[in-house]
Length: 87
Image (spheres, rainbow, N blue to C red):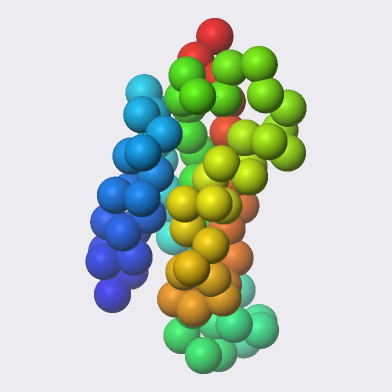
């Protein structure tokens, strides 16, 4: 199931034309926390994209959340984002 969720995130975030994309499942760090009790996962996304050029962190994060908002709070409970421009 984790692999499916990571693949789903990868497919969604491909719309940002990332030059680097790493998706880390951190669900094991949140066992017993809200959301994980219902089977939802916690993920960390590290993404580098030219689409973030000139944007503040909040705007870059918004681009990511706009692509995955329907996956929250289930099957994704939490998403930590490290978004950087290519330069």
